[in-house]
Length: 250
Image 1 (cartoon, helix red, strand yellow):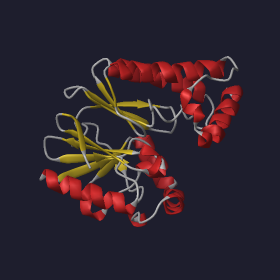
Image 2 (cartoon, helix red, strand yellow):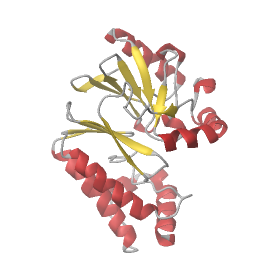
Image 3 (spheres, rainbow, N blue to C red):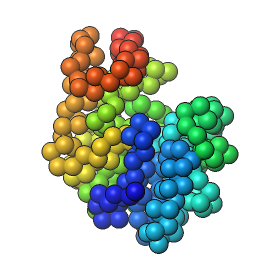
């Protein structure tokens, strides 16, 4: 079900890696940010959206990973946007995104995966402002809804995921730290942060998310093993090892 976290902002969490789909009311209708994950959940999200009684006018993907590039026909044949860099990567990796969706979950409309285009310079129907950066994935962007006091952070600032450096690109530790600085500046205008995965943060939890991610990255920089409660999840061992190797490579 949709949970309202601010005026005109609703979040629905999936069972798959605690993924968050966000529904934002704009001037002309609803914008769906990173809707997912399984086909059944997409259908349930469509039911939730229908109950709001407001038309969907657009979609937005925060970055070009398969679980953030999904769609359902019931949302409508409307524009689906991303940053220009994200749209370029998604277009070139569409078959891979479709394959990963098919392997990772069930019932996803594969023909609708990764059909995103660059957001117009004026922002189109997306309310708020983009905070684009180079951490985690090319063209990654958060959405700052300053008038609602909300930051949609994409795959950043999670209470369940450690910072995930892109293993394919150099300079990720520095890029991630710079992205946190940009997001921290944006977060001064909000009291709610919606991560791509995990619990919504509010009030003092927001600062705690930044502190946890910075402490993790600083430990990597020093070549030390981070003390981080998120690493108690066994399935993060491989991503953590990849982070260690990426950090050592610079």
